Amino acid sequence: MFIGYSLKKEGVKKPIVESIHRLETQVSTGRLVEKSRLIDRENDRYAEHIVDDTTRETIHRSEEPLSEHRGHGSANKKDG
Image (cartoon, rainbow, N blue to C red; front, side, top):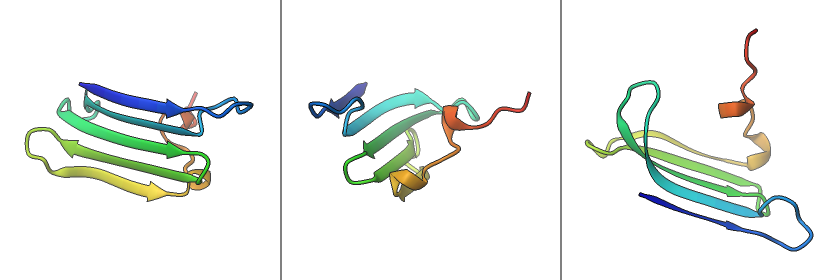
């Protein structure tokens, strides 16, 4: 299952709003999780909610200004 959308604005390179909702395997545990993410550049908002697909337990939830969302995922600095 994958549901996603992006909203573009003429003259702006990146979408002003992006959203995803999908099932994926959590790398650290191998469990199936349901991930929802909203990136709203126009309103400086980042929200993410991750739920275990079997137990429905919330694994992670964050809401913060997008301008403060740094050092996550591929943005992490790698040792090397």
